[in-house]
Image (cartoon, rainbow, N blue to C red; front, side, top):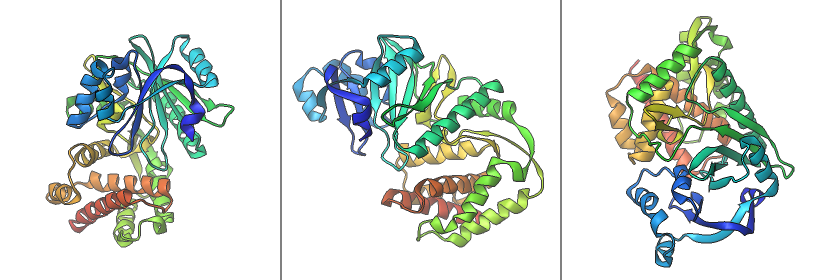
Length: 360
């Protein structure tokens, strides 16, 4: 188990392990808990109450029992602790841990701090596929920095520990005053406009990341869930290919997972992180479709029928391009093996795709 490879138990400081209804777990220190809870970004009322009140009430046994908080003593394993001390040039590093969203690409996120200052974040996994994502994210962040893209993390370390755990460390500007943002607005518009302006390039379509995405999906169409109409997907791919084939296109960088939980506002600026699914040559505007759909699904709790109704009267060619991208991403990630929830969201994407195709 990954958790046991990065944590040493029965020594160190007191922590609380909290698990929500979705099976997601956090490890929070009793000391400086308000700082640690910057790692926890709830959208529901109960989660927000926990974040506001638990730092003041965690010493009460009844409160801990009510939220099923497990009390443990632990510290980071020695190799990881020494690595992070070197990276941040700090001996008194404190940490909080999010064990990750349960999925095939699950990874642990560690928030590092010193007193009331948040130093940065470390992602960890013992899956070699995740190491490839860490290496890719390091390369993309470096390339974006070269193009003067601001308000994104700086990669500080990417490598593998002696016990086989892969590590990616990045900087942050997050403070205890940073605010989550859950609605689309000028900050998101301005960030994506600047990202496009600084990274846009004229490129032959066949040399673009988006072309590789479409051809990869085309080659693995049999990996789609059995309940998905493959004809609709292949037709949409063919139409996108025909639109761009042999042409010079102005594509730019795409974040790939542009969602409220991958951004925050600090001093009036939007800081965006988690670029592991980013690409450098994609049609502009796809990130907005992802933000809107994911927010409806995962924060507003809209079911498939409600989302389909919202898009029923909207003709949106960018939505089609986005849907092909997200279908490709999940198809390659899951490799044809899907749980019930993933199959459900595939149904939504396929139905949205069919709605768009029927308008043409």
